[in-house]
Amino acid sequence: MNMPKMNGQQFVAEIRKHPAFDRIRLIIYSTSKPDQRALAGADGFILKPTKLEELCLEIAKVIRAEAHSPAIHSMTQTRVNSNARESD
Image 1: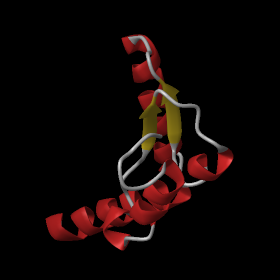
Image 2 (image 1 turned 180 degrees about the horizontal axis):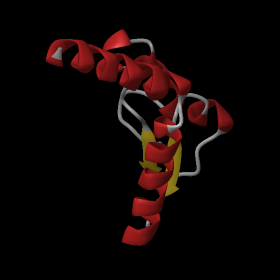
Image 3 (image 1 turned 180 degrees about the vertical axis):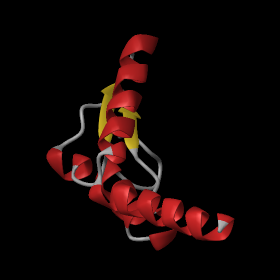
């Protein structure tokens, strides 16, 4: 990724070190092919230019992976249990 103050690897590392961004999915959308180090913390990658369908497919892939994550299942179950207790 071409950015004025840091490279893609530094950007991904910077985002991932902040707990506030733990649940944010990161898809790199770039004109440059990234190296594996930059992809290590990313959830997806799309090479520009791209068609809208390809962009949507990559986003859907990341969303599906997130939905099947054990952490998401655990959080969802906690919310369901909490809502059930509130309605009692």
